[in-house]
Length: 471
Ligand SMILES: [Zn+2]
Image (spheres, rainbow, N blue to C red):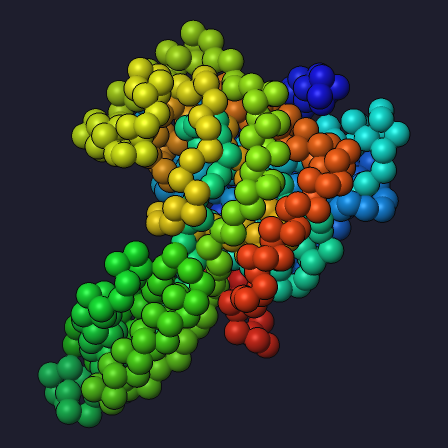
């Protein structure tokens, strides 16, 4: 334990450099060439065997060290979000006007997992233990795609455990399962015509998109309450006096379980079919990605919580608190008040007066669904998976925000990242030292997945639509 803590502390400067570089590159999903590059170079320089372009995905990588079993996988991410460019200061100031920024802290996410892989290797060498350690550089989490594609290539199949984390406002272990999702673009094809001269000869693809949206909005009323359907129109024609022969709408369908998403998605396709029929158009589906809800492994969560208690929370100083106070002033106060009144928060009375979480929050809300989706979901149905969170931003920081980006580039984010690296490495070491812990995790996993083994949500035979996310 102390060796792992010391190792991360001794290498903190290097890790912070990597995290800051990735923060600075702020590359969007599937474009993380520099971010992957710096992590691959670093791990190579430390003796890891690195496969770049893993599974044929340009910005995916797998770095490996050691031999034999168990095979411990640390999952990292490094993609940014559009429009959230921000200096590491607590007032709004973009580094690049309109540019991308790390508004979800993935610069910290990947780097802590990489740090955990290195710290665990160091501990194994010292203890004379053998195992295989892997760091997975997973692209495009924000597109809910990277790990789904990597899973389809079988990159996680031989793992004994997947360990990861996500930067957050609290120091805890994840027990919530999020939502499963499908992401697809519906493209309608009509016939162009002069909109005033001979509209009877035209068939409007835009009409089809609009009618599909009307249908989808009525569909919302008749799906389970926990499901959500959202869309944006990505193409709606050129100018009003030309009947558009092409229009496109991009849909997300979310629900607590994968099979529920499948069911609602089939009904959405019926709505598209109806819209095409009504407008005399045809349509095609450009399926981008689908992902599972997270399968929580309680046995692993218990081990991780134990490790987090040993490592302890980040120690923030007056400088961090000052930064947090200023940043908090920019939050929507009513939204924060509302959050603090929620039943989940009510139970956490010690947080009421905290700006930065410098305590540990016992894992709660097992199986709670709702909110966003993550492609870690897919990994969690292939191999027992555990995810913690460490405080990298003030309590109440909005998700996917410039404030989150600012904090992810500050010493607050760095401190949370180091806690995560230590805890994840320690978790790996505990699992290697005590094989019965892994046996328990697998027993639980097998029971949970017996009825519904993992099936890639991606249509068979479809090539990765890497270029389709950005047009
Ligand atoms: Zn994220």
